[in-house]
Amino acid sequence: MTQCPVCQSRDGFPCKKWGGMGADGYRYDCDVCGSFIFTRSAAASQYLDFTLPFRAVLSRRIRLQTDSLGSQDDIPVVTTYDIENLIEEAPSLPSPAQQASGIIRFVGDYVIKAAEPLRQFPPEFHPLVGAVDRRSAEKIASELIERGVLIGIDASDLQHQYQSIELDLTLAGWEIYEAEKRGVTKAKTGFIALKFGDATLDGLLDQHVKPKLQEIGHPLIDLRDVSRAGIIDNIMRAHIQDAAFIIADLTHDNPGAYWEAGYAEGLGKPVIYICEKSKFDDRQTHFDTNHCTTVMWTKNEPDEFVEKLAATIRRSLDYQ
Ligand SMILES: [Zn+2]
Image (cartoon, rainbow, N blue to C red; front, side):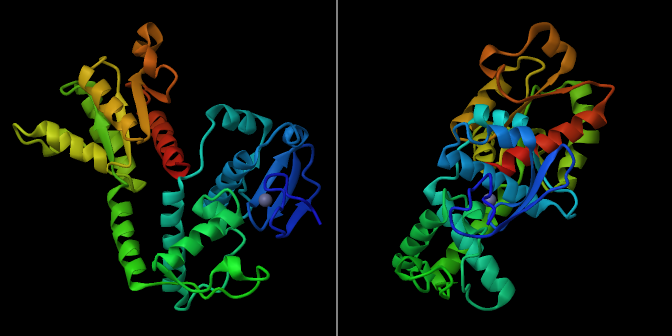
């Protein structure tokens, strides 16, 4: 049996390897990670020093990418470059509490769709909920049973993985599921921090950024649209707390934008910095944000900018 170069097929689920991908590498169809192409150079680097959490992060990324792609032909390609980037980025898996929410969502979605309890955790269960391996995902599920959120058979009591677990949500579980769903819908919005009153920036936002983000399901909250005199600071804090991500424009070195970005970073929200290109090239932004993701905009190429911005937002939300 082929061993998956990413998850190493540690849980015993099949992985198929296909040749004939030219000089590029091999295609793998892993039941856990999904379909992907691993380039030859990436394959040569794979034995370097991948830790288990690193493998889990990579597996989750491929799984999320595979599941979000419509076409079978358009599968993710993992190159040495991707691996090096990921090592540098050092992303972490979702916290155990977030994994627990993921499990509740997974079971709830399944039960609603299939109209019957979940009989088995599918192979892609742990990368989707963000656990390091299947065993640790099952442990959290067991704890959710103990707490009365899930009802079913504790997977750790089973002799082998194909025995049925008959998992469903309890009423308490459904309440959490509903609340999470509402939270998720709410948290899809973004918040924009910027200097008010710049005509170029305002035009860019109103004509290009807002329509595009609305279209991809991440509408922007712009305080100029909702401001009420006097209590703006509290409104702003509440909006940042509720937002899924923050866009901060640093073109004018606006202290407010820096403050809002810092507040959001402190809350653990993804912050995407934007800056007018010539300003960035001339004088850079504040040193602390130099290493952060900054998407450049120019007055004359708004389309290119919004595409990049949308892709950056998607990436930071999917891989959180
Ligand atoms: Zn795999």
